[in-house]
Image 1 (spheres, helix red, strand yellow):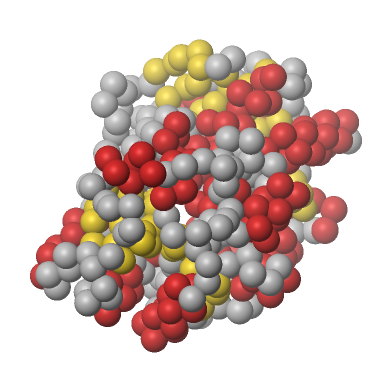
Image 2: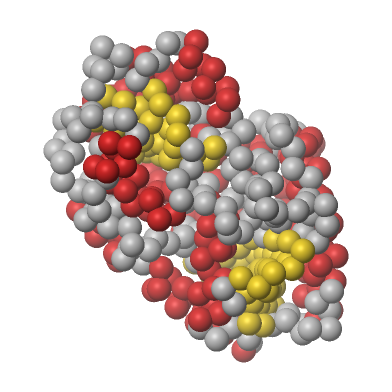
Length: 412
């Protein structure tokens, strides 16, 4: 089978979609599939092309059995709505040209990851010309997220209605639509995708590598914390859709408890604003650290007493945070901001104790959730979270099922 990935993000990006794509493709190669990746140079979440990569022209490399085509794109330093549209459009154009070069290579599957929906027209065209099956894999409902965060007007506005109409038409043209959770598949169904086209392809965790048995003591010491400090950790992309200001506001309430430290590990478009806010509020209990290499992620997860998964209203309905998979695999105790009717809210109800779920953008609810968590015995791992990870998030199980789905689709 010949498989083409078309996605903005790929290894060596350490977080989000790039991490999953970078793990998926070599695993498909191990399962006997020929894989090509049409991707951008790594730039996320720093919004800056990583050292050692060019962005002025195309490049080609062979990485872990995968032929990787890097396609240039515009990367804004500040991702405003207009600049983000240019960013997405530039990749759609350059990766589209790269896909045209595959016309006579007869791919069996073209796998487009949303974001970006902008790539959909050329993917559908190439699929039509080559006979390849096309799959839209939804990591993030772009249109819903943009409208939910007010970046493109409202759903009832002219721009919103037009965008949703185009989205609905494009989704209907793919041979299959996959996503990472049942609620996101339900959303795709509401957008007109037929039941027999829907595939569940959840994000995973390496449950053999990220375990509750890891010690974070060494890293905790390296970062300058004392053994008795209690760490409240947010790790991942630091962007506007997270609404991380609520964490700083909560930190103010704990200034009189100096052993409780609020730690941000990551990068993103919003990090400087958060740092300035923390300085202006004189938050001596807040610390910012860079993204950690994958080899040290289990240690980082282990040193945290409480993990934070924070999003604004609107974003939580469209996005299932990828950071949560590793928190669950580590048996972490997590405080999650999500409304009750979202995937995260439903998961908390179905698996009692998997994490503490509170209303987004509500400081009092957030503080109440923290207070409840500090009443728990945080010295032991969360057995509900770990059991869920072992049953539902194991990487090999998920990828084996995905390959079965690919084989069935291609045989149709």
